[in-house]
Figure 1 (cartoon, helix red, strand yellow):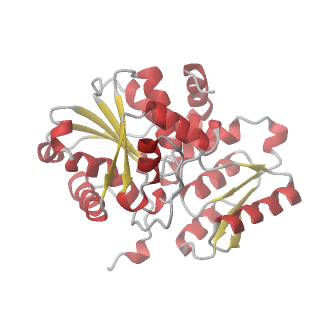
Figure 2: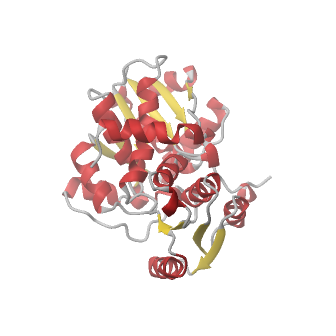
Length: 314
């Protein structure tokens, strides 16, 4: 379903609507970690997260007639903003189903891109029912946050940019967080076709470790009652993402809440940039396993920088 040509076409398709985000390094973090780390800063991406890549590719993969019907999704975070902005760029309507408890700042951000926001109860059944009502009423197109090959293709362009950056040496390892698995799957496929000697390692919260369990038990296990500060990683793998991850990832490393917070603070302090908790897991995985990565060249995808500033105590 995903091959090198499709990744290249996806990258060309979305290139005018995304940023080729910078890659940062830090001598102090390298000294602490014992390896050379290259931070791909998707927190500088449009809407502040990598999700823009997948949403825009899914939108632009359709013909004009279907695009004009508009788009529907359910999300309380970055995917909601990505679908809203992608729809706006194509001069079409978007309908975003969000839970009633979603942060006000995120609801306002989605509305700021011209989307119609529909609030529902905070459970999967309510989200699906509300989306189905909108689909029946509008005839719009549904874009799943990760269980969609066009979304996965869009996410694959992030790692592709790393591998094509002439200022970055051949990487021994690339690490990204895993929640629903869209970015993880895209990273695995991009690595397969553009840097096949690089190992793909995924990082996941201990408190939401369904991907770790699924990977090691070789069967899809849904997440139950996730309780983690990494709110972007509370979702479960889908069949599509599970199959790609179980066949293409080297391993999945889990990290504690304390390790997530410690690495996030290090990124803020040493790189002088803002990242959300979900971003910091790859660095946490390295710091937890220094011997494993000693003297390696490691790529890290900083997935986003959207935080709720109202929760900062100053």
